[in-house]
Amino acid sequence: MIRSRRFRPLILLLMVLASSALFAQYQRKPPDFGGSYSFPSPEHPEPRSEWVRLLDVGMLVAGLALGTWLILKRRSRGGVMLLSIGALAYFGFYRKGCICPIGAIQNVTLSLTDPSYIVSLSIVVFFFLPLATALLFGRIFCGGVCPIGAIQDLVLLRPRKVPEKLDRALRWLPYLYLGLAVLFAGWGLGFKIGAWEVQAARRFLICEYDPFIGLFRISGAFHMLAIGAGFILAGMFFGRPYCRWLCPYGALLSILSRFSWKNVQVTPDKELDCGLCADACPYGAIHNYRADRASCLACARCYEYCPREQVLRGAGDEFVQVKLP
Amino acid sequence: MSDKSSRRQFIDRSFRIIGFLGIGGAAGVLTKRASSSAVYQIDPFKCTSCDLCRTSCVLSLSAVKAVNDFEKCGYCMLCPAYMDVNSRPDEKGIPTGKVCPQDALKRRVVGRVDLEDPNNNYYEYAIDETRCDGCGKCVKACLPPAGNGSLRLEIRYTRCVECNECAIRVVCPDDAIVRVPVPGMAPTADSSEREKA
Image (cartoon, rainbow over all chains, first blue to last red; front, side):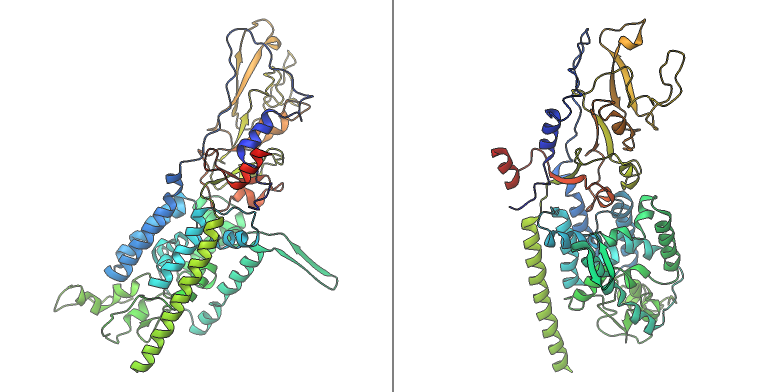
């Protein structure tokens, strides 16, 4: 194994510290205090046990499974909302948004380019599991499990449409951001053009410029909190601006979900052609009464507004209350 | 129509299989390299107690705490990490100010107590972890030659939430936050090598 010597284990550090000759000239022998005094030993609490540390992985698996069931089988908007509130509470506020697949892009990149970097197993699971789920069932992770998606979904009060051309153009941004993040996480930046020299160390751009992390921690640099507030404000009118036009993990998921096995289907057998679902979709993901697999964020709003869906679920044979988006 | 849709299905299925193979392969490679038992810790030889541990941890009260190594502590009456030597002295010449802004460094007199001359007494210094915010002012003040260097900053695992990337590690100017194997867990090939050496 080529794990670097930089990563000395804790025990070694402590042993070296305790018996170090480095400070010997300053160290005097512990004095005799008289009385009955015994030296306490400094406490070094052990890391939490394995199962507690794997709880995050458990929650992710449970969230994805529940999300798949709620979105594809139950087709329940209320259920998805509850799930996303739960995800926001656990992954967002309890875990401070700091164990997440979006940031894991960088850990994975770094561990591929720098073999001495130890990546933890839960990060590997966090990175790959939602990707595999996207291949099977579409962007379930975005819909119900991602705390960043959840916080934006829950503040979406007055959805407005974005002109389709602008939307299409902005959808390229995540790929750009993904490229930049991978470049900075894996290699940093260093080039020279004439007299113009650029040097930048490796850094984790996605985590550094995550607009919502400050909200989860209720602390942070002022400009990041302001950007977060700006995203929340914009998110009240335009569906999930971060997820659609910036999220680099969303870019990966959207590539994979193009080939998903199952996905959100607006009334699978026949549709009414009323277009309420397309009006209800705040993400502009429904074209020709069909959910576009790449951009569908699996929020289940289309089901909520579909009259046929209500008939199918036995809401009533004679009257169907049509909700207008 | 059905021709077109079956072609579409074929493409979908092939890409799905390719995707699964790719994800599986990459996950397999990384799982081999990954460790489920690595945690963050501060390398005391690199740490310069710069105060970023206090401000950068994702927790509102940092998981980094000062820890006193009692074996090295001098148990001094005039502890430079306890009292601010630059503050105004009282009538006995003892500084009145304290170094710790949180008043987290506590002391108690130990051993045989000389009631007349407090300079003759020994004091045990301990950190109140509910107050300590990991600013490292005491660690700095305890450095030789003023002190024995018995205080240092440590990530307390009872508090650390184990982010996938330690927020302090990202900003640490000394690269002092390192990933270490969990003590007592399965040793890595690297650590067994070291034991031989």
